[in-house]
Image (cartoon, rainbow, N blue to C red):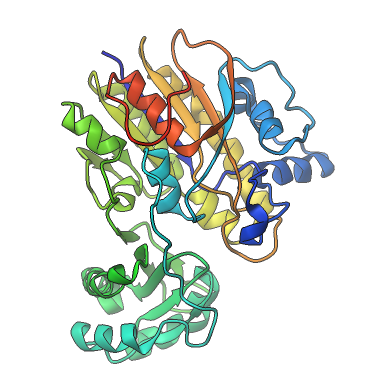
Length: 395
């Protein structure tokens, strides 16, 4: 029996989404623009392992552009995927990659001040016993932390903020406020906003004593609405296999269909956990990993150089993961959305994503443009599972 590995490079899109303009993202291309940025700086982006699998062809298929240094003959399965769900966030992308497009429209908080209405904040303050809240508007994480972190420590009021995604984020100090208390506040918030179809409540703990020393910790916790039907993870478990979730996969799927869970302080630690999981996984198992730092540290911060360096670091470790594969295994690398660091704003961008596959004995094959759900169905077929309701296998 075979094994399957699905690696999601969070936000590593490759442009070309046919509906990008509807999301205000016409022209966004995370990989394409980072590669061009480095080429114009005279320091070409070095991704030899991804390039060998067919990354250049995937970008070309997605957005019709040729990039210097990425025209090698592919050695692996290569193509690009288009999303059908009406969202460009992490749960939407991951659910659809796992075979379940989102069947509803998410609720988004308006770009007003305040953004989160009293129908949410008043019961949250009362039920959680809070002295009040701070900020309550659209923002990315680090700017709001630097501006309001000291006031939060002094008053005990957690910082609330949101974005163009369907999300409520709650930021509090791990020691002054308490990590478990933050998790409990987020649990109460989820009970309030999930019925509104707000996709996630995210606990954002931090440490430090001043705006110059504040930093977020790895103890982030996402409380997501459960998927509306059985995902690839559920199907693997129902068939007697085990799923090994790496990073925030457990949170994204509301811990449904998750057999084991491994987290780490950063993406390099998550790669260590991935290698361990691939080495130890049994026949019929699925290893499912998310690498979040491309998105959280570099995409949202519009840090092009940091994003480029993170891609190079990830690429350099791909041989370790591939080296743990056994005959009969299939590994697919993809992404859940874009977050072009050269684009306006600080939010995700609607893009197609690369689809790169490899494994012992798996040769080069162009699959063209596929759907997100086709990725999950391809892995399901590889594991011998019955077809799902959405998507089709492309191998």
